[in-house]
Amino acid sequence: MSMKEAITIYKLIVLYTLNRIASPLTLGFVADYMIDRGYTNYFNVQNAFAELMDEELIDCAQTYNTSYYTITEAGRETLELFYTSLSYEIRAEIDEYLREKNYQIIERTAIVSDYARRSNGDYVASCMLFEKNEVLFQIDIAVPSEEDAVKICNNWRSESSKLYSAVVTTLLK
Image (cartoon, rainbow, N blue to C red; front, side):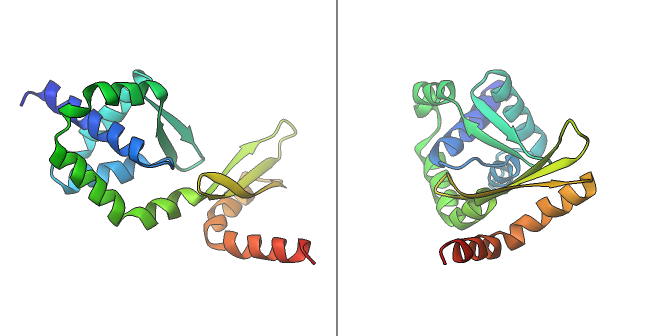
């Protein structure tokens, strides 16, 4: 197999994987599968993602510390055209990997935080809790420093369910 054919297969693996999951995924999640199965190295996975981005077949949403990828409509159409170029064995292997990792996928994408600087110089930390790709709970907190915004974003993962529970309990009195 030539390098060009190999890159095409890597790109199809990325598209197939993103198409199978309703939630956005990180490059690392997809790379782990491809590297663990011995398909390629991290550099080639990054290259495949970059080419897919350039071709507008995938989208990227970035938070302050993570990039999340989704397949675009053009990516779905491309996958449909070249679906059979990805062997049944590879598709079945990806499906099994996604079943094994389902809880991790939900964990990684259900809790999202990011922050931004406002025009007045302070920062806003935005924290969201998702359920089935829908926003379940969202809170925006203004803080005076970037350091405070980062702390809030970092603590959101461990504290989000407690905060959600407390807010719902308090508001439903």
